[in-house]
Image (cartoon, helix red, strand yellow):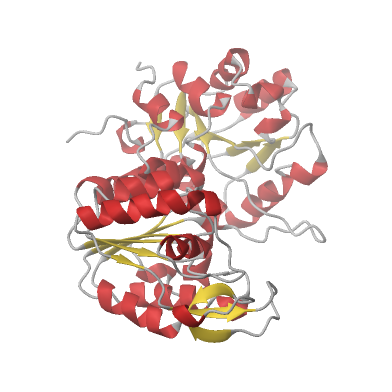
Length: 401
């Protein structure tokens, strides 16, 4: 079936053309040194930028960073520019004042084929978050072609995401297309058996996803803090564990729906518990029915891990979204790491989404052994829920010249 959006490979000869590329440079910095602490988003953009530069395009990269209320040094893209200058062989220019429109226009016009211009943080201009038509038209005036390679922002209705495609021919970048291909595959044509592993803190954050997955998967694993609410819905006493009291009814409904559709749901049968929520809290393994009134379930236990491993062994497709425990504490990360390592051994298409899940596969050293690691975060979750993302919709309805 033909794509409803156009891919970057369809652009034809781009030599000498100004190509406006929406990337995701929203990277974290060490507050003490100002150095980038996780470059994965920049690295994800390099294939698209590199190809356009190699083809002689005059490339203009634009992104937001953070949630600034006004221009400030802490949210500047200057550290990203410095990084790019160290990792690219082409000239990398910087337009340091996004609100100085004549200066930005001049910088875009001065670009030579095979050179890169990075615009300062788009959110330093009030028109970006407001999806100002005037700001979108200004951004569009900087280029001849628009490429969106920032899947992680596709759920935003910002000027650079939904406004610019009203003025320029628009294409999906390599990373954007890769994300959509991987997610569409597991939503429409997964190889079966198809299992989903869903974790995280709250049921309320994943209700739509869980409801949709019940119509798609052959089996479901639930872990993390949200598993406590499902266990409470089954009548277990969860001590001082995180339980969403107002979501217990929802959990009961989801479990009933799974039963009626014949979909097995794996929940923890044993946990690693502690008496306080702290990185240095001593943890102990306890069977679910023996959880004490002062205990907090902070990770899945070894018996649960083995149940998950056994259930997943015949899977041909696995979606993983959310950790199995309090992953930020090493003592309670073992369940999450065990799941990551097991997924790497499967003869299956494995798609991983969600910040903590991505961190887990990195920490477990198995990132390169999985099919697809989504960069999307909230966008991935909403796309899997079936939401029509504004950024994707804008690509589909962009002007054609």
